[in-house]
Length: 475
Image (cartoon, one colour):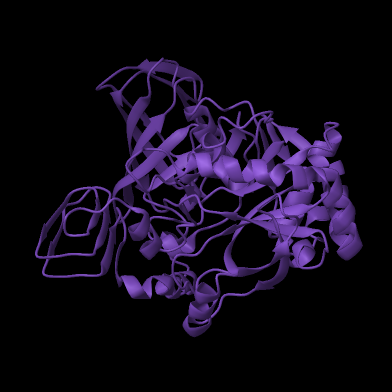
């Protein structure tokens, strides 16, 4: 059995913490310091006969995925890069073709979203064991969450009759879209409806065979796109020209709603898709006032609130049922009942083309990260952190000069035909138009303060001459 980790989501309803280029699956929302993606990988430990997971992600997230796998000592795994997001049916098809290419087409695929919480690991493993035999018998198994409240934010699965008397597997009567609150209450009372978790188990070969009956164009274009793949420093790049022809469609609509071989097994494992801030509140550890706090928070006569702050002190007085999220460059205050409406703010940010929709003030790169500390007319100050052995591409700028000051570690600096070795409290100047490169030859992270000055300080003012990470435009 091979886990297929789907990591293509953007998680915009958890803005401002989740951004398009650093979405929620890569965030640590709770106090275990592990991200949702890392927990998705780690909760698989203990399942027998499990092959290494395969992650499918956006090409912009490839270095984040690689870094987070390395942080949990799981770096030797295949990472497939989708050139564009086409929903789950094509993504799973790419993974199935990948297994086929490895001679594992009859292996089971355990398809998992990268951004969910499952607290009861043992119950999760037990549900997989229940589903495994049915998947071996060519059924398509989905896992339905037993609801404990009327929920309007999830799709539902209506349970039919039992597949047989010896198992907790049920035929599927219907897939139902997100209901209104009145309908959701009826679903809860009937005890015949489950939340659709988007978790699946089936054979790779059976998936390709059955999908070809309903959407042969997905098979055709995904097969072509996979056949033209390239590899680059460990990543598997799917051909964009062929993949762009593939329709964007979910596996539920493309296959599960059509095949007569779809079954569902109930999953009661303290699951949440943490899709909105109210769900983060429900999942978090509450204090005596039923508040969930992350970071530096003071509270007086306030209860049933969620506060997530990265650096600054946040104080509450006499309020209830609020969500307060404070990041370096944006603050959100919203009533818990209105959590779904964060998307309205995101839409306004998109319309205005604001940078807060895409990136944090701290931006992650394959060599490390940089953070904007201050900026003004004709200047910008950043803190750069380079991992041991990493280097920034050889490059030049048309519109800015740079001054580098070493705060921690050792820096090797190439500037035109000179090479310098700098240690703490030493600095150097990079003139406008100079070809330069910064490297960390040491064993500890290198921290640099970079002062930029010039008429234009945009990230696109880079002419790259050489790059060990295979990038073209982004630094």
